[in-house]
Length: 584
Image 1 (cartoon, helix red, strand yellow):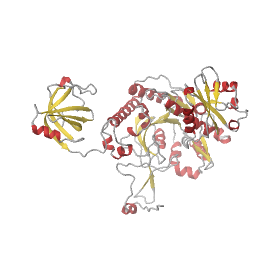
Image 2: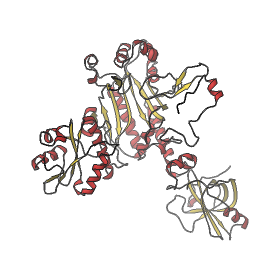
Image 3: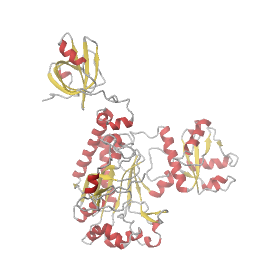
Image 4: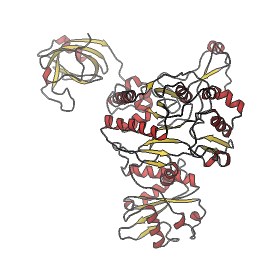
């Protein structure tokens, strides 16, 4: 037995107990006549003491030769600590060591294994196995485990059955690029890794499973950012014989359960918002509603003056920044520079100070009088002491730009509190969206999403106006889940493929198996998939997902620890019937 207790377990009640511990050397302090060593494992830290009055000279010399991250085993007696440490649970005791065994020596780590480390992100990703020893990463992975267990327990209690679906599937056009896998036994043919188990979970409904879930790896070959990885995990769910309201109630219940059990937060009912209203009021389809600053559209009160910038704009829109009138001119100029950055793309920003005495001072006073500016304040909800920030231009672009400014200002003002949670359902997305490049419609979600009841005929006359029977669950400005009621009959699915530009032959080649299944009695069904990585990060008070993934990849999709992806040798290429054609 390598240990009788772990390094976070011992308390004053264990004094005079003979114990055995094993772990890593966190650090040591050598005073010559006495040596203290902090021993660490997953559970905590226990202080070891080697004292020349009570410890042999040989044992002290052994302790003096210990380096950081040495793996050791000690035997000894739990004694009361003379100088107690209230910052750790084991701070009342220490171990008077009687035997020390070095299980494995260690090179000096390339960064310190501390909560606040001196290692940069690239270095820590290269040595991820060392980074996991640090409390922030270790605790994030333990937190993920807790959330995952709560999900499994809750869904199992609600009658859901966990079913595994294949990883080697057929490549189908569902949005992002597929990762493909060559088949050695079928030369010139390829599997794809699933972007989601979409068609399989629908087939499970045809198979009568009724309530399915799976915590499943998914793969998308797309450009990355802080909250994306080429491989990610979904809580994938599907239900049969349901309507939209059944889905919303089921997964609102799951989210409410997680918030209560994991975060101690109780939220009775989740508000709902139409997709069109989300764009109009917040500029995006996943608004953070923990704070205000709703958009105020100013066309009616800001156009038809002599200010050409506004007159020529498709949309003039502003937000009221609480307390923003305290900003200096220099601070406002920096905001203007911020929105003009290439990442945001605005040409400029108009502002209006709302003075405490009820008067207004604007950067465009030449064109607008006090009565005009009072209307701006009314539309944006600005109060004395606030600052009104106004952007103008193309509707879609300016909404995106102002949305980014709203989030940046909220961050600066401390309004995005990680321990506050504001869930929101966003409903009634467009079924289709027009792509200028390909000059055809694409499914906003995926091609199996059904239109809202009663809107099927509208597909023939105005496809862009058709709303999807789809919904997203948003938490603190992040989409954590999304789903829809699915098409469950062959005729409607064929019509959808037609509007997406598939010929009947292409639809049969890509999705013939699903169309065939619908002919054998497919029930009405629908579902929702949570992004587990993002959900866990937000519940954990963060918005980036890397620390909640054991071995993440960098922004280039590389695992710098194992150096993947990597070339394969010529023999493997020949065996797979592949030939490289790399362009320099």
